[in-house]
Length: 40
Image 1 (spheres, one colour):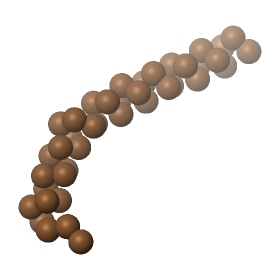
Image 2: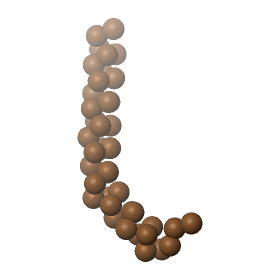
Image 3: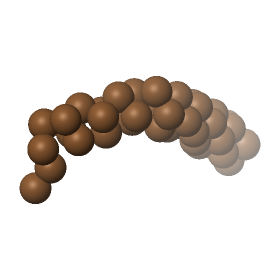
Image 4: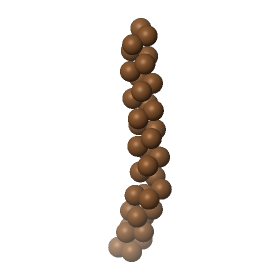
């Protein structure tokens, strides 16, 4: 489906752009979940 070059470009893009966003949102979600558990 994808050529090797496209796949590498996609991986680079993911590493550079999406990974930090996902990481930040995960931290936010974990924080929200633990807050919700604490308040219960």
